Image (cartoon, rainbow over all chains, first blue to last red; front, side, top):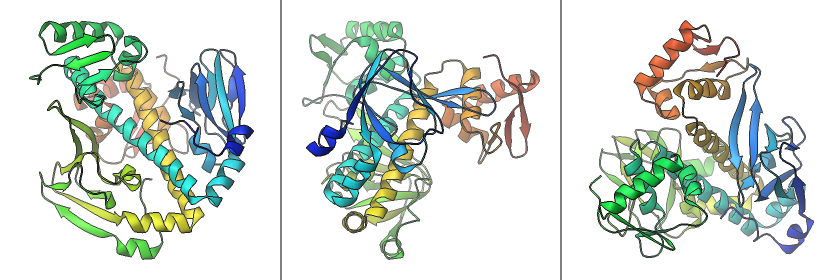
Length: 201
Length: 201
C-alpha cells in the first residue's frame, strides 16, 4: 500500500537501490535529508539518540514500507536508520519528488492519499494494542482484516508475522487460535483464518 | 500538530462547528464523504461494521486530532464516527480543501508534512507498545518526549492521559514512576518528569 510504484517512470528510473549489511547505517541523525526510501528487503531500525543518552527505537521498517517520509519536509534526518538485518532499500531523491508533486497536483494528491491511508492503518493497529485480552485482540484483528467475504483474514507470511503485528508473542497467538478453533469460533484454512460465528467476547 | 490553523482564512471561515451529544453519529459508513474534521472537544469513536457482525473500533479521536483525512481521497466514509462523549468538531468541506491543495502546491506540501509527521508519531507510539516491561516503556516515553533539555518530558493534562498514551493502566504508571523516583532515576517537577541518570533498563 505504501509503495511508490505509481510514480512517473522518470522518477522511478532515477531511484537507486542500496544494499546494506546488518548494522550498517543508511543515514544518521542530523545528516542532510536528501532522499526518502522504500524498504525492499530486510529490516531497518530508526533510532533517535537523546541528550540523556537513551537511544530510542522509533520504528522498525519492514519490506513494502516507506521510510523517512517526514524528511521530505525537513532539511535534516531526525534519527539514525540502521539495518537490523541485511537489507535492501530504494532511494527516491527528495528534490525530484517534491518537484514532481509541485508540478502535478494529481500526483501530490496520490501521495497524500498514501499517507492518509497509512495513518488510518497505524491508528487501527494502535487501537488494537489497547485491547488487553489476547482472545479479543485476535478476534478484533481477524474482523478488521477480513477480505471480500467479511469473515476471512488472509494469512500472508507466517503466523509469527501476524503475532508481531498484533503485539502478542507467537506462543500466545498459537494458544489463543487453538482455543478459538476448539470452541468453533474460528476455522483455519490453507489461505487464512475464518470467523465462523459471532464470538461472545 | 495535526491542527489545520495554517489554512487560508477563506477556508477556515468556510469550516463549520458541529456539536454532538454522546452517542450521536457524525457520519456513517457508506455515507458520501463531504468533509474532514478536527476534534475540538470530547472524543469520537471510529467504528467499522464488518459483515461477520463484529463492530471493530478503529480509532478513538481526541481534541486536536484530525479525523477522516482518508475521506479526502475516497467517495464514501469507510466507518461510523460516533461521539463517545459530548463532543465538538470542526468540519472542513472536502471539495474546497482539495481545490486549495490543487491550486497551491505550498499548501499541499504543508498538508503532506502534517500527515508525514503524524505517521512518524504513530509509528513511534506503536513501537513503544512493543516494549513489554512497564518500567522500560515509561523510560522510553520520557526520553522520546523530552523537551529542549533532552531530559525533561513536559506533562500537559493528567498522568491518566499519559498512561493512555503509553498503553498502561494509570495504576501501573503511578507505581512505575514511584519506583523510578525512589531509585533516583527520575524526578517529578511541577512541569514534568526529568530523567536524572542513565537507567540500566
